[in-house]
Length: 125
Image (cartoon, rainbow, N blue to C red; front, side):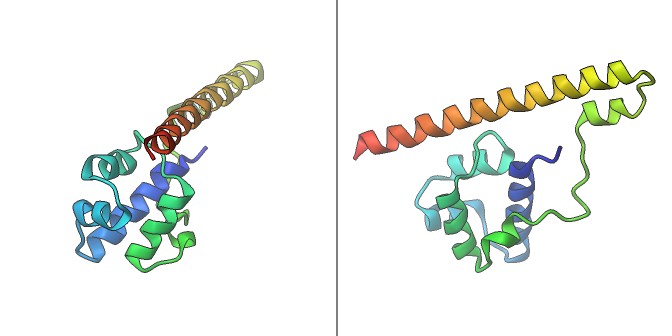
């Protein structure tokens, strides 16, 4: 499974580099601070749709360009790499189930964190 947040972050970083722009400039443009942008781009904080649109506008690209999966983004999931070496079908199925469960846990953790952050922003206003 490909980590979309990592792909989006990679695409943003590449565009920042080619356009000779800095994370601080991006932070100012989308109305946040450098620490938040840094968390977005290193994968510790998910980028929501509103932020993605603001980033696309700042970089002068369509949102689709930020979410584009290129052939250079290989699947680096260690479980997937290990599964290729597993001999028994039951073991492969167990690994696949464990991988899917861990993905679900991580997804729900990120959703909860994002929701909490969004609620905090609403409560401040």
